[in-house]
Amino acid sequence: MNLGFQDYLSIKVHKTDLNLTSYIKSKLEPFNLAPEQNLIMMLLWEEDGLTQNQLAGKLNKDKTNIARMVSSLEKKGFIKRINCPEDRRSFKVYLTPCGEKLGKEVIPITEEFDRIVCNGLSEGELAELEKLLAKINKNISKN
Amino acid sequence: MNLGFQDYLSIKVHKTDLNLTSYIKSKLEPFNLAPEQNLIMMLLWEEDGLTQNQLAGKLNKDKTNIARMVSSLEKKGFIKRINCPEDRRSFKVYLTPCGEKLGKEVIPITEEFDRIVCNGLSEGELAELEKLLAKINKNISKN
DNA sequence: TTTGATTAGTTGTCATAGCAACTTGAAAAC
DNA sequence: GTTTTCAAGTTGCTATGACAACTAATCAAA
Image 1: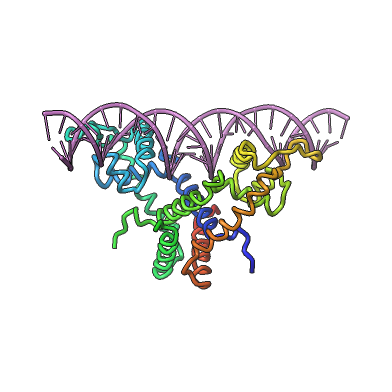
Image 2 (image 1 turned 60 degrees about the horizontal axis):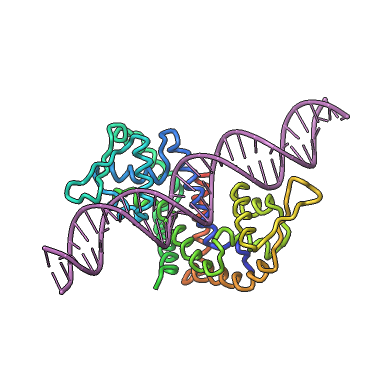
């Protein structure tokens, strides 16, 4: 059979990603938290006081985007940036009491999100899916 | 085992999607074509003269984003918008000779892209992957 | 046929992602 | 101890995606 481009695997992955984003976005909206901003909060709830650079490293994201997300979180009052004494170029990012409190409500939501996503997938299927995704990533990785 | 949020399936799908986008973006860059703009071109290479609304329907995208992508493609000289005589609200989107010509080079690239993505995946694995993605989508679909 | 609902497309705004260029401070090389 | 290089963050710009509000045109219901 001759596949149209609409059947390309990349497109199906993309659509799935959009659906996932849309779903978690709606769940987090009541807390005034955007999905990727929430990932920064998740890191801080685990370990407060990370630098933007550490956040970027752990999330594998561009430092420019981290800067803008941190800035947005600061405007919302969930975190604050404190100048780092050891390295005057960098900031440490700390939770505010408000941001701290948010975790109690939001962490369970993200955990439930993952459960819902994986609902009906056996351990084996989950492993297979992750294996196949890894294979795709390898196929398109440079070199 | 206790999974950190970094292991969530949604995050792995997201990363894979970003990698796919980045890969095809670099392949299309020499042609001054962005990945999603290219999907519009792909449709037009199959059937010229679609309306923006039809494009949005076929690509399952928001009409506002289609409008902006079409506008960008028009600025680049790949397409032109012609007022539709039957419905004065809508435009038909036509390839320019320049846009037409582009297809000969770009279509093979997208086909090779899909081959590279699926490299090393058996028919069965591909079907399994699509089945599992479909399951995820079902899990998070409203109602 | 007039009104009322729908539809096509646009514009504005926010969130994300990636890239380039820049500033300032730190570190390494000499 | 300079100088050169590197590292942390910022700003600007483009592309995408979602959503709300809007205009103008068509269609349907009365």
